[in-house]
Image 1 (cartoon, rainbow, N blue to C red):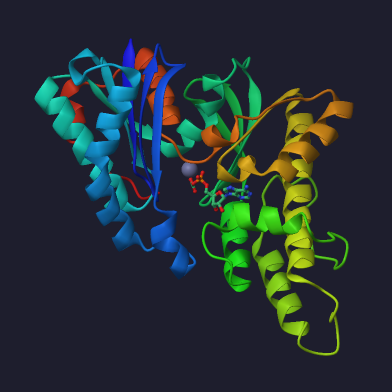
Image 2 (cartoon, rainbow, N blue to C red):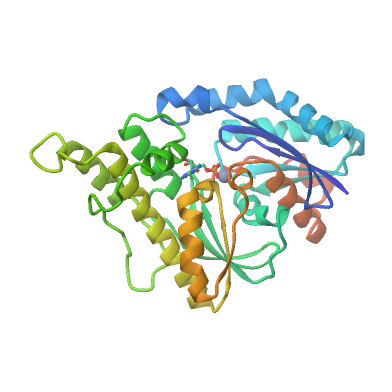
Length: 333
Ligand code: KG4
Ligand code: ZN
């Protein structure tokens, strides 16, 4: 069975072809980083327009790389939300047009379910497991009991982890997306040069909060101009900030495993591409006998292969009525 996945929820225009839900035949991603970088964040209007310009070329490229024609596709899976509505609508309406013209079934996919199931493109994971999604819009901990059976254990009460990376990079004048730049600059810094706060919240809580840390970074940058902290470099700030985020993410993810009595952990979403986080997680999980499953970086950041994968499994378990599909609408949240 061949699934065509389409993803346009944010600033990546992506299409992919999967065979039997997990075998990657193609995975094409056009990022808009060059468009948004000078603004230090995504400009929704520009994102939507760029998706319109690119979507048909990207789908054609995905089909060509997979060496299949549109007629051979058995299912079209498209991101329905959450995301920027103007961006989501481009993918959704393109998918509707293709489904209508070819009379193929189509399915709307939740972007977060895509992130959670991206690991299956790489390796099978036995249910149940703890899943931590760390992206630009979400920091969510789940107990994953099976396909479509997700229980929220905790989430960020304010900024998402990726958003905090982006904001710190913006404060330091480094462009967008901030995550990869902060990671690279942090390698030259000393994570202990300045004590950045960790928000643990109430005892045993699996929620997150990163807004206090963001303020602490702003204060540290401002104070460098005065008599305190003169020796603190940009790289030290990047390293100290990253260390604080990583420590909280790992501690809470492992706490979730302990609370749930589970020994399998899936880390996913754009921030999971961070090499320092991946390495620190492995080091912390090993003595606790927790097995970590982390997709390779290209499957952590936004892509359509994960949407095709989640769409395939959803379709196997609960195929929607054909009449529902053309009424499918975008969901911002
Ligand atoms: O999952 P994703 O591609 O899009 C959303 O669903 O939001 O995640 C994007 C986020 C951005 O905030 C970006 O800065 C962050 O992931 N990110 C990283 C790294 N690569 C991407 N954060 C830290 N380190 C990275 N290497
Ligand atoms: Zn995402």
